[in-house]
Image (tube, rainbow, N blue to C red; front, side):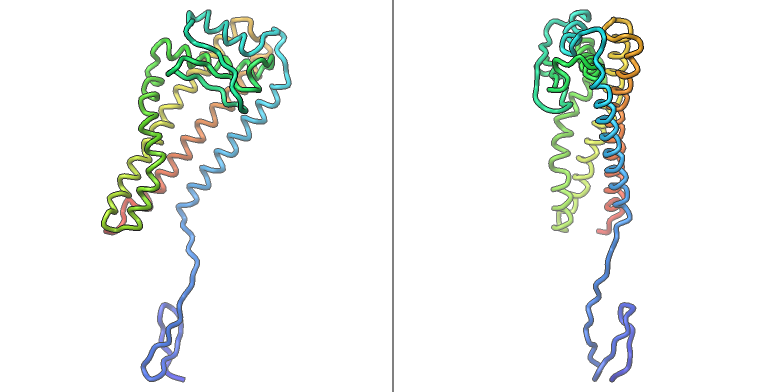
Length: 253
């Protein structure tokens, strides 16, 4: 047995000056991945909250007797909006207002429902239609950002991976991070749009007779829970961007 030598913190022995190669297999934990986990947990909590809150008030029918699509129709007409069609679409809470084709789309569990939850959701989408009709600036900005943000979401990670695999084009990493930042910008701009639509909806429902005063608590709870999903998405995207900057911002060339 030869003289012991310390290589890579391991004691190995040499014979005739020849080092016996002993590969080291270790485990590496990326501490920045905690940021991703925080974002995932926040989104899961927000999603669970909106589902449980909606399910709770979906079982409570409004005493007004109006269905959600009827309320949407009356809100739009009272706001002087006559060029928006109300459509029934499939899905679970896939409700949306499309400013491109002026359609207000209500999902299976909202369209035709008399529940407090459904009426609240329909009124919220009407809030977006009113924003569009009045030229609400954050909505206009969001509509302009969406195409670029979609591109950024689709190609940011492929660019980052290309930059990691091919050192000569590592500028792709920086480009990927910049494109991903567009997703974060979109999330930030979305917040005032969604909160404003909910405020408009609650203001209309409160004094319209579409919901009774004691039913407003349920509608408010549903819309507040829904708004928190956008907050969680914004925080999650921001943490992901922070992680990318921490990993590659000071990357050695």
